[in-house]
View (cartoon, rainbow, N blue to C red):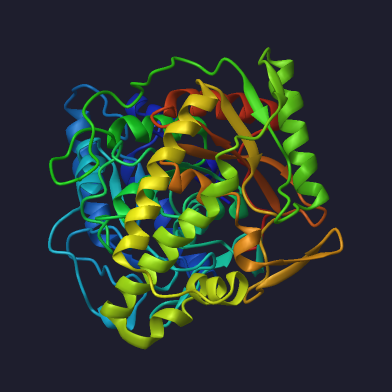
Length: 470
């Protein structure tokens, strides 16, 4: 990979501002890389090649006339195709939305452009965002640049593959049950699911309304924790059309830093692999070596969070999707796994949703009180990236199903908690292993501080082996 393409967005922005490299030559490098690898990766839905080149030239011309540097000045970025980019397809991988194009930019895309970013295009997703593997009937399968036989995760798998493979310097994904964090873990990059309302979800499809406004979030994906922080500051802020929107700075929080870090490396329902446990243990040791107060611990709220997420994301999701796309809805991977692994599920009633909603609010309050500003480090999934089409695994002699293997991410969604992923190790076969950092609502600053310390201890993002995507 071209050495330029291995930089993080923050470093690239500084180099462009210093005149060491132009935005135009950077966009050209990204487009050349995309042309050489995306035929096997399948990461992109739409590419704005001519528009991006023209915008980069215009940026360079404006920069030559002087002015204050912009946070993402001249940096090429990508956007998950479930987030509206004017003129580009926003189909969510579903035949029911075939040919649907955005008529305007989502709020987060407007803010990217205002910060000087050059939008290269949009990236592939799981069908209707209902899968931990990015595959759909419209745009096919996205492969992992570390191993083409394995998934890049879902539903923001096209975004993670594009960034990991050097086609983009950073991007925007969305997360209702791990859809930023699982792809980041599987492809060895960084990702942040913010507290709902911290970053506007206006312009996301399906819309983040009703119960989905409480569990879904739009957030950054990138090659460094510094990039996550920079993107969060660009994206965060009030938007009147977001039902959960909050005013204030991106790092406004009840606690300035984490007084203590809790960690655990496995869950009784879905044991993690030995290499995953080793990565979490190494993370804990690395944090302790940097002066953090670290001890084993697991929030009690996680015990009840999974069942509530099943109601919000699974039952409510199936009801709404069935109304929208018909009888195909229950066959989508997450919904099919819910019926297969969780047993028969009666139709969701208004009373059932109201009771779950109240229980969620009580659980979230208890979680916030219990943490008292602490941060939790744990696995992202039970294992590294899985092979395309796999739906169960044997770990420590136990069979672990599709949903249970991903049990570690939905906790943060139902609790409305910020959660970041940062690379922390490698599997025996060389696949990336990330760890997850979870805080109480609006504790993004503390979460990112701990993630940055993990990055220092574990080495951060590295490019996939040369030739894997060629």
